[in-house]
Length: 526
Image (cartoon, rainbow, N blue to C red; front, side, top):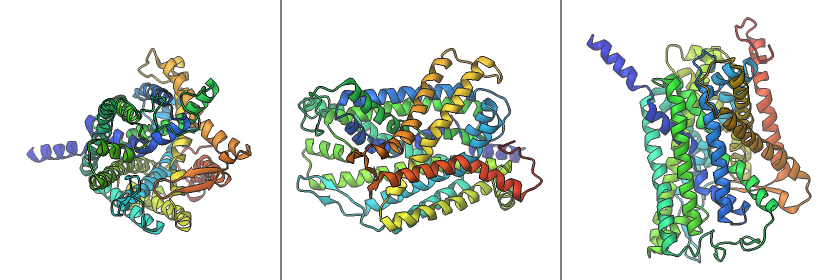
């Protein structure tokens, strides 16, 4: 009897509870975007703090309505194929949409997210070990001196380590999520508190809300008359980038197999986690706007100046910020690995992804082992393919550009699933816990997600290629070691990736049909 209890206890300890679910969600959502995002948002809005704030509020509303819409979709207890978003799509949208997501989620979304985040983590690790440079104005600059192939090797090692952690210990993966959440939130909360405090002490002289602020450097000042169309264009240009910072909150659904009560935990984790993230993002933005600082590095240099600190203190703070960014990325990789491994494992168990039979044999009687091996194999192939242009260019531009594509393409999937959820809300085809406000939140979500997808794909990477405007000729891709890319080349990369994304389920099912003539799966065209 004691042995049985001990076994049950061990099984329970390996499960992911509600608090861990929330920390995993937060770790997946909060990457490094928020540390640098407001720089581009200020540029889009001509350094006008009020419209930057409006842009964030609209993005938060779209995200919250999407979260609420999925809360109703998830509430069904109907049995379904797949894991997470794919499973929800199967029961609400039907076979074709469900199977499409079941294949692209593990083979495209998670793999590219995991590889890209690992690369940026590799850069963050190397950034810590590079000597800071003191500029003539007293500011500090830290750049990566190592060649791109070194970054690629470090990134690959990080990806392998996190896949191994998730292979052998769910408990360790949970612990990393907790630590990463604390490491992320501490500096972000500090930015908000210190920003409000020092901004007030300084009389908000440098604030982006102050028309006389010397920090407003764009050609069109706040005090100048701006038409409503110019203001709208600034908000429209900002929304897709802001919505990117909230992506990945649905990945928590792929960890349902490791949860105690997934049918209750997943919607609760989403409805708790997203408002927390939104609150932190707003706090950070307000702190930066009130002090007139564009990113986290310049913000902390500003606070050191206000406290009378010298160059040595600034250098130490910059290194500390680099460590925080690195740990933040580790948390994101961990969350992505949790989702990726379990999403792939679901595809292997049901033999719905190509190569499933082979990997199923390798991981026989060992939970998640097959998913980890498959993820490592596909991840290694993607790493190799992306390493080639990265090493040739000696730049992280390709990684940065590609890192947004899984999110971009999945916006149309989110909108599609929510649209089917809206139809189901009235048809009652699938029994769910219906919310009275669902039609409202669904429409806002569909418009918001659809706009983010359409604006980027059709305007940024198609329409702007033919404007003849010199400002439209290049795309600024790159995080720590970036460079400008010709827009036509960037557009070819984006559209080629979209074609791969759309054709991947058909390629997958063709492979299954050709290799396994006798298969039980209902293929995407059936």
